[in-house]
Length: 634
Ligand SMILES: [Zn+2]
Image (cartoon, rainbow, N blue to C red; front, top):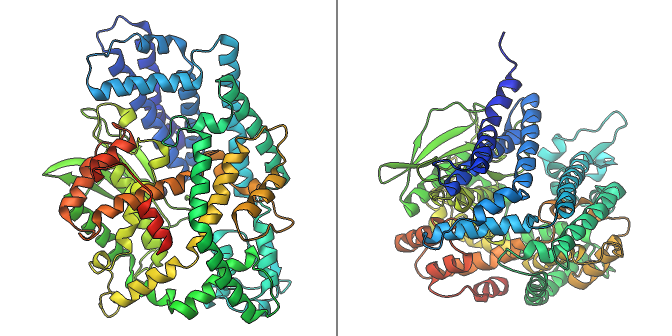
């Protein structure tokens, strides 16, 4: 009898983990012929392969039982890695190695590995290690529950059809009234975003906004209280004042205090512009409600939509006619192969769904990696856009393999699958991560492979590569009208850019409000923290929009689980992205000398150097704020 597919999958998925366990035993038994460091590296590769495959399949496999099986292996790998870092015997074996005369990468690998162990608490006494293990397990469980509550807590409002004025026809067609004659509008993205942008009914937008900002509710507030308390306890056991200090220690920013200074610095740079943005929205609001004294948070997006249409005459419907899916993908492959000297050769391999396209990435006649593109929506699949690792590249062991998981329109017979320009930007952004993974995936030590720099830098290469989807020079290579073949007009692209700048001030201060919230929740004494009061205080300090009674944003702020204190990361990466982009000033984005220097100085080294050094190698100087300041001011 044949085994059920999920059992076959479990076996295949656990292969790497089983290998890792065997190698760990071998390493601890000692006396073998193998170099312990090499064995440890192979062990990490094995566990990583299992974890990567499980992490991907949990999000993309079309069959429910396989997705469930993948989640089981994900947890097994998490437990294995957590126990590994608290294994004193292993730590002592690695710490005893003499690498004084080894090469730079090897010394860095050992230094960082031992630091990982110490940061996990390996050198603490037995009761402390036991408590740390319990805390880790508890935090995993509470975090999963927080995210699950959020995924399941979809809320809605109900409206008579006559109150849906302003919404696009395809949205209204997709929302017929129910038996009670009312239309249900949920807090899911495809309902919520168009509703907040287009619905003329102010009262309904307010009602939906309150529903959305109440998701997670008191249940998540309670979970968050437990999570914050456990994180604070862990930080204290490890000798830190706060979780924020603990988690930033090995990042570029180094400390909670410096993260706080960064947030306030960006806020100070953006607040004048935010005030102007706000006044523009208030003027627009007064055309609809003459006595209005303030713009409410639920009015912001709708008012921006009105101003963009009037002032910048950018019609999103017209823009998408230049972006049929197949042309955009072909353009993206053409651009990256030109700037990085690559070719993409279609590969025939077994995949999890017929939609998935696979390419071998070639350079100078040799294969340097493999990419998988899973680009269209289907039931049960991950709902956002992200890059997943399938294999981390290790020299003489395995080549890097990465996967793009997105939800773009699917071209069919007679329908070119026209993309919103926002989606085009997203495709370039995610492909930026993929290039970093592949080009940086040729290292001896897996801990340095691909996107392996300090975590607060990882968005920078992708944020920088978004520019290739905004410049007329690069767009003109592929953005042609789907019916007439006309190249996207230069004037339209500059109008799009100007319209995109509207609201940049209010968006930036809003981001700094979120960053301050994420940092303050992890700095405060959890026993004294009143979450809602702290949120109100920070919102009033950082943004021009007042707190809306009845909302509880922090209970639905998913980043508090994954990023904890480090939401500042997005803006920190953007500062460096804008700085690196300045190297192309006056040369153009296709300048081969600059793109190749960037490839070799920033992407190819993976995590073999600190970011500050990578950026110095590329720019010939330390990174700085000026380019970001210009971007905010222009
Ligand atoms: Zn990203």
